[in-house]
Image (cartoon, rainbow, N blue to C red; front, side, top):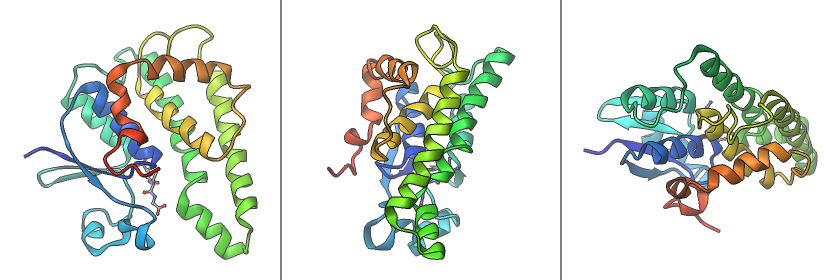
Length: 214
Ligand SMILES: N[C@@H](CCC(=O)N[C@@H](CS)C(=O)NCC(=O)O)C(=O)O
């Protein structure tokens, strides 16, 4: 039986894992969890049995269930060492995790759907103000990411494609959804261009996901 990825086409955390799976050419069943429809399928009784935190992505191999995009990507790198995404050299490994974390803990939790809903509900905030708040954290984080990466090189960590790139691409996709002006992030846009030239990564994009809806 194929392993399964529970995913939502627009979820940036799921997109990270889809990129890793595409890069490593790992076959899997795509299980769509619509985060908005009918109040959100992540809250269905069946899904909560798999992931009590009501989030995607979730990786399932028989009875082995793994949440959190970072741990799924580390797991995939151990179980499928071909096309590594975490470098073996200590400093490159640490730099990769550092860049991933700028997005994983420094941006994504501050732009999430549930966070936005909670801010609106608790503080009677207007949707536009909440989006502004999210944009602030996205810009701050992307600036930190851009400052950290080396001036040259095809990707975030020199010429070696790493998990940091698979965190960056979905975050840029989200930044565009939040109407962040990306023109000053020249290096990040260059890296995005370089990555999207890799043909088999295309199938991981939201537009190529089975549950995509325009
Ligand atoms: N740290 C987790 C975050 C997972 C997460 O926040 N997922 C979002 C989509 S990107 C989600 O499922 N949100 C559900 C909701 O907001 O209701 C990871 O990296 O996997």
